[in-house]
View 1 (cartoon, rainbow, N blue to C red):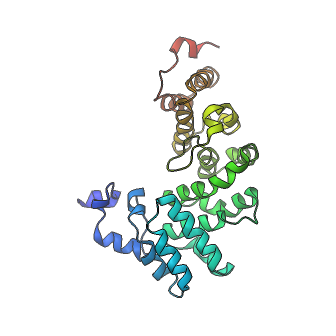
View 2 (cartoon, rainbow, N blue to C red):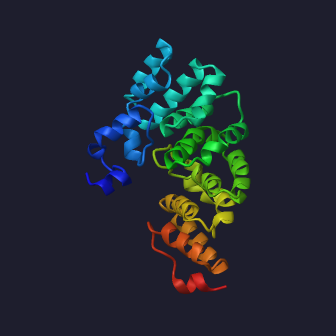
View 3 (tube, rainbow, N blue to C red):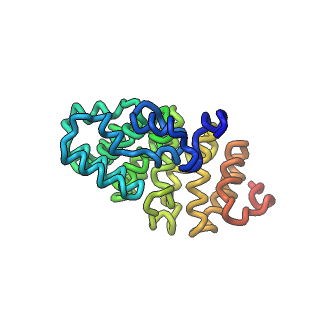
Length: 268
């Protein structure tokens, strides 16, 4: 791999440099791509992160290593929540390793004694994490709890669309994507995507491309089962919000379906 390729991070497992993988497994480096995050040996990472971990915890993490990525992270999070005292668990939220911070997100999400609102409040620092991998882990960790009460989750997330932090606004959209990457699909939003409009409308001209991409991906997800809704929403947005930001969102949102006519979208 070239030096430039190494700096960008690996896109294939075979391209993860041995030295970098060793640093990831030692908790001394952060993943630069999701591929690198998938390559991590969680048993090795646990050994250096919590050298005094109980046998039960070590066994749970070893068994989780062989699961699919989301089940792996959820199982590790639940095991950490069950076997670590609160103060030791809290320390993981600021760990140098983005994977360990991800563990913490899933550990917090496993708490059945906390409401979704309390969980979101607890993980805000990780929603606004500097590393994109953690920002992915946190919405995937909380998503199962949020969709238990979809209407309540939409009401909970809607105020976050006005947050000054782009990462928080992006979370408001990304957490309930109808077909979220690696995540269980949300049938109600696939068939009735209009339910999610309180999360999308405030972001239709967001200045940050990171947020724009999430909004566009949300609509693209829904367009695969509700193409008429996606076309109608985007036509209205183009008519009501003729900005470069909205145009970019609309173009990306309709990539899986035929875009509405320019004339129809331009009428006011």
